[in-house]
Structure formats: structure tokens, C-alpha cells
Length: 255
Image 1 (cartoon, one colour):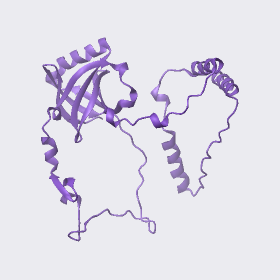
Image 2 (cartoon, rainbow, N blue to C red):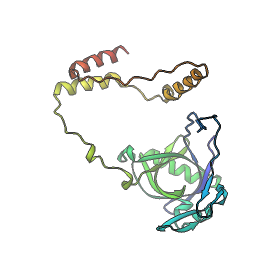
Image 3 (cartoon, one colour):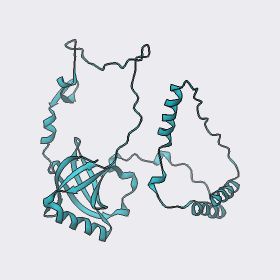
Image 4 (tube, rainbow, N blue to C red):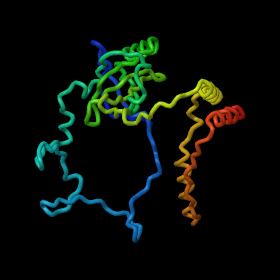
């Protein structure tokens, strides 16, 4: 069940819509612990101060920003809630854009927005307008010690808030671009046929994390003392491209 971690308002022109925000996704990988190799005991992590030559726990720490060598400005946890920006308690909509204009590389985390009781009607109005126009709201909001760029879009009966990377967060691809090889019309036609043959509908229920399932089987095998063999790296052979495409189309057709 999604639990709200942020409360505030959606600032929509002169309209304020009280909402709650919760995390939309949850990943549960297998948990592995560091152990002392000699006796397989879980170690205790401790903090050590070389200045005072003492060990201490996390409750005795504060956060510090190093503005000069070994010189810090100290922040208590409550200080982060006092940062003087209006987006601390407001999802400030800057404007609206067509959803197709946002390249998926900009998308970060996903969150749910639900209205407080008083905001039910303006919330429904905003959601309905976004559905009818195909637009998404571009906004800014602060949580987790930073101000996020984000977009709001309709999702079922609520709104989804997706954090977006800022332009400066996106690494350039200039150094990655290979020389563009010449493609023949026949190769393009056959590759298109392969895409058509493999075209399907996106059905999330059909996909699963095979790595996690295999990892669980490894745990069971190790408990039984069964030896695990590593997967071999596939050998890549530069074959005749058209021949490979034709074979792929035929195989896709059979599936």
C-alpha cells in the first residue's frame, strides 16, 4: 500500500489544490549481507572520530557542507524544511506541454498524487482537462533535499507525478556516436518486416525479473551443495546481415 510522504498543494494559476504524494514503485531485490569471512558473522558498522579518538553512533552526527578545506557549515535535519522556496509545500505548475515533446530519457521516479477531501473538485477538473487535451503539466516541487523538475499526467482516477532530470543532468552522446554505415533499401525493408513480425501489445503481466528468479534458485542450490556453472558469454559472429534478417523474420513468424 502506498503511504503519503509529502503533503502540500498543486499551484494551478490562482487555484490551490491540497494533495498527498506517495511513491508509485517498489523494488524488492534479494537482500545480501556483508559477513566476516572467517566465521560468517554480520559485522557491526561503527563511526570513528580520529580527532577525539572515539567511536560514536549515527544519533551523534550532523550534516555539514564543506565551503573550504575542512571548514563546514552545519545543518540540522530541521534546517532542510526551512529552505526558502515556495516549492517546499507546493507543486508549482509552470506551464503545459504536449506529452510527446518530452524525451523519455528525462524521466526519473514515479509518484502518485491524490487529493485531500477539500481539493477533490479542482483536482478532478485538472485531471479531466489534461485527459481531454493530451497535455501534461510541467512543475517544480521540493522533497528529499532538492527541488525537482516534474510533470503531472492523468493516471486512472488520480494524477501521476514523474520527476524529470534537468538538462544539465543528461550526459552528452557526442563521444558515443559511431560512424554512420550505409544501409541498403533491401536491408531496411527486411528489418521493417522483422519489426512488424515482432510487434505486439505491451502487457506488463507477461514480464518478470528472470535474474531475481535465477538468483533464488541459486540460493536453493547452494543450500543443497549443488555446484553453479556460470553462463557463457555469447559468441558474436559477423554473419551475412540479410541472411540473418530473413531467418529472424521466419522465426518470428513461427512464434
